[in-house]
Image (cartoon, rainbow, N blue to C red):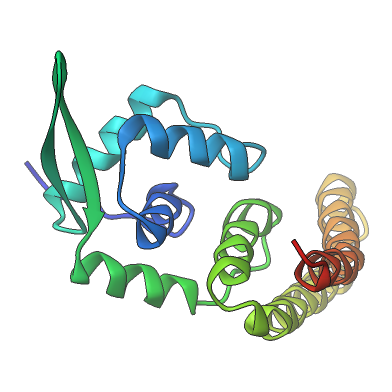
Length: 186
């Protein structure tokens, strides 16, 4: 059976990030994912277990059986050195300028940067602003070169430009919200 590769838009990186924070069993991982990133990642518990199996097959995580009195043994997952390296490489990779990539991948990266390196938040947001701005310029160039008779293609490009422009505004708000959270004593 061929090995499936993980794309950066896979919740596998979110699971690896949660396991980088602490070991956990599948149910706890699902609950943490729902609680902290439930509006970003929409996966069922069965999908989560399939992802854990794939991560285990790829040697990104290992499972240990933990005995429980009067209950079935529980599988507790831990991130391997290989998984930690992959996760940290992903964490340092810029997000593209597509709306979905920003909604899913960037927010996930931002969550884990806030958890592990709050001082790196501004750099991550700055990189995303640059990437998104480049995306707007690229789309504007495409729009300028498009035949005026291509009404629906023009409308599609205009929509994408407006969405990315809104993302740029959102990134400013995002920075402020994160700083308020980081600067507020708990």
